[in-house]
Image (cartoon, rainbow, N blue to C red; front, side, top):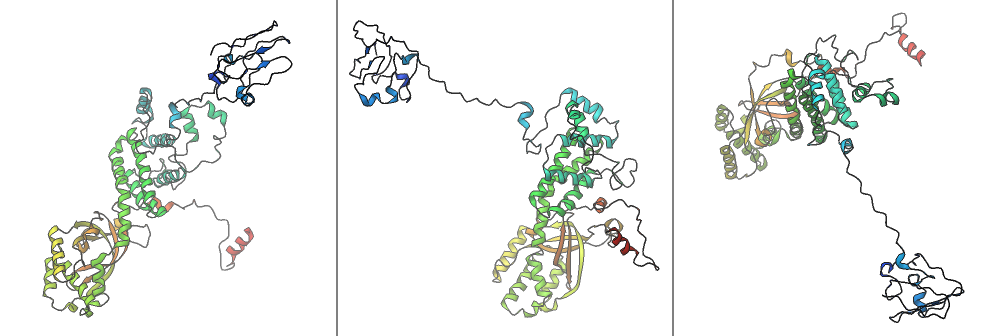
Length: 520
């Protein structure tokens, strides 16, 4: 809009130039709700302005004593239409809105703030050529003793990972089982010595705050100066750790077993990547394979403990151990007898046993001749063939008992021992069990799929007069990598100290009680 003409009466006047819309306010400030306050022209007291709008809008007569009433009073009462003396709204600049500062992407170590080092696709940061040369020629040089290299490797590994409380406990247990003391050091004072930590480099800080040391702690840990009865065995430590120590703490918690296996595998990968002990590379790789199979196999063992002895063995037990075969005229008992005969005849069991079952017209002539509790090791697994499966289904259907039985395979076992380290129990390395004849037991194919060679099973077994053996009760199942380590007996062992209390004697039989009372 152009400038509105002003009518003068001979007094001093001034021109108000307003680049506004028809409402009396510029387009820039429409709808702001506040009166603009740009630079103003100062009028003498006698000046008087009559502003008229070309589009029929209100005009304001302004004087120094008072402001004339606007033509449209309602519009003038609004803050958006109020214009003070000599105000030029187009000169006002609205306060600029504060722009939101965009956070700059983090770089370097800041991006790894929440990285623990145990993520699925985690990879250690690449080393510079100088760092790689230092590791190869100084830190892990073949000329250094194995214990020194492993101690350095442990300290560097722990410094490169962010372990939570549970992982720290697991890793300390793993090192303890291997004869390495990883307990917290007391009275070192480095954590509070801020000046020393501020002046130290990364290597010095790692050494000051390290807790992993080999030797010099206690007689229950490995001592390089007294290495008798100790030898390097990465695979053996992992076997004992995942088969005995972790299940002893978490039972069959699948998530905990997997976390423990992944933790140890993460460490073994670090050892291989940095070539800390090339002379034991094959042993380290074998230990890593145990970490891969352990979680799944431990879950299978847990399922077998709850599911065994299975349908066939349970049926055989009820028939010949509980005397149900004498009531074979009953429909339910007769159905069990049919299931027993069809399963045995269609299985890959010895043909002599099949002939005896076929020739026995009276089932009551079959009975139990031997019962024992034994520990076995799985030597071979013979699963049922497709022919056996179809035969069982066909025969049961003809007998009018479809779905009452499942085809069975053969589990070949040899007597074995589950070590526990007790003096009153036999040990596997002291017993000659290899020359003992193998025993065969029938199991459904679903159970055979969960077994591996080397699995140990403790069970109560029975033998029938026809030569057939069956499992009456299962008491324990151990994974194929199960291993007892002597270090497990040293968990709560303490160094002996001299006892100053007098022992009981004939003259003073209450000496020990009196000494305890005196201490209290």
